[in-house]
Length: 126
Image (cartoon, rainbow, N blue to C red; front, side, top):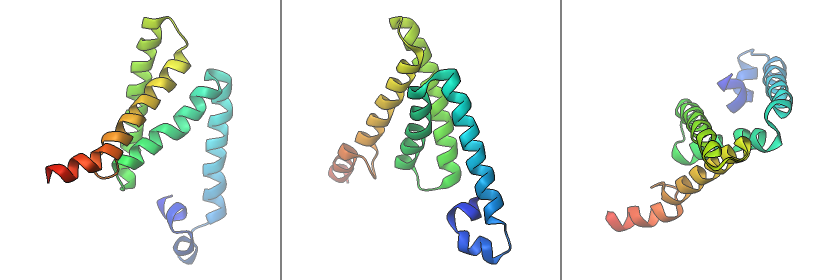
């Protein structure tokens, strides 16, 4: 799967069926998205598709680490957002999306290599 996603020419040269893997992965994402829209709504589906991956990308360049970071980030934000929604007696989906947005913003600001303020602080410290 990594090969077909990141180096399709090499995968084709080694005899891997690109069409099979492409349609399998796109079908899985499409099915998950359609089912999720009915369950949790558009806000949470879009938040869960974009924010954990973007946050993990700011923290690492290695795909296996990125997958773990985005999964853990999504789970933690779901738990925190669920309890936050209960505390303020608000929408669970909205609270989870807000917690994810705040987490992404904090990572965007303070990551040492890619963060807006983190780069400046890292340069001043070294």
